[in-house]
Amino acid sequence: MAQWLEATLVSRTDWNDHLFSLRFSCVDFPHFKAGQFTKVGIEQDGKIVSRPYSLVNGPDDNELEIIAVPVPEGVLSPKLHTLKIGASLKIMSPATGFLVLDEVPLSRDLWLMATGTGVGPFLSILASEQAWHSFENIILVYGARFQQDLAYMPLIETWLKQYPDKFRFVPVVSREEPVSGLQGRIPTLLKTLTIQEQVGLDIHPEHSHVMLCGNPAMIEDATQTLVELGLSKHLRRSPGQISMERYW
Image (tube, rainbow, N blue to C red; front, side, top):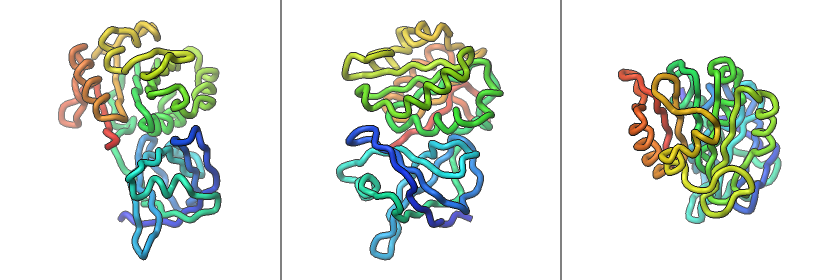
C-alpha cells in the first residue's frame, strides 16, 4: 500500500541557475528497481503538495536523489529549488513505473535516449549492476538546449573510464555549438544516421533496444524515426524494441 514517508534533505547540487539535484535521507524507503519514479512532496497548510520524480540514484544507494527544474508557475518545483540542507520532505513509498530493465527484452545493444531531466532514470539504470551484465553495448544519448544543461558529467565520465569497451556517450546540444558531441535534435540526428555513425553502431530490430525518456516531442519524433528503421513499440502482449516514458 502506498504511503508517505518522512525524508530529510542531506545535500543538493545546483548545476546552473535552473537545474538542480536534491539528495534525501529516507531510512524506511523500500528497495526499488532502477528506472522507477516516486512522488516527492512538501506539507503545506495541512496538505501535501507533490509531483512525480524519477529516482536518479541506483537501487543499492542508501539515499534517494532526484533532478529537477523550477517551473515558474509550478506549485512544487520552485519550493524544492529553494530548500536548504536539513529541510523535511515527504516521499511516497513504494516507487513505481515500468521503465526498467526487467521489462526490456534481451538484446545486444541498449540505447538510452533522454532530454533534460529525462536522463534521471537512465542514470539509475547505469548505476545498477544489471545493466552492465545484460548488454554487450550501452549507449547514452543525452540532449539539452545548452552545454551547461548537461548534468552529471563527472558521473558519466566515470562510466566511460570504467567500461571503455562497453559504454558510449553522445551529448547533443540543440541551441549552441557544443564543446563536444553533436548539435541538433536527437530525432533528426537519428534520421540522418549521425548518432549511429558517431558511436559506430547501427540501430536494428535484431540486436537493438531503445529506451526514450523526456520531452514528449522528442519521444514522438524519435519513435517515428525508429519505426522507419524497422523497430516497434514494446508492449508486454506484443514485444518490440522501443520503450518510453513521457515527462509531462
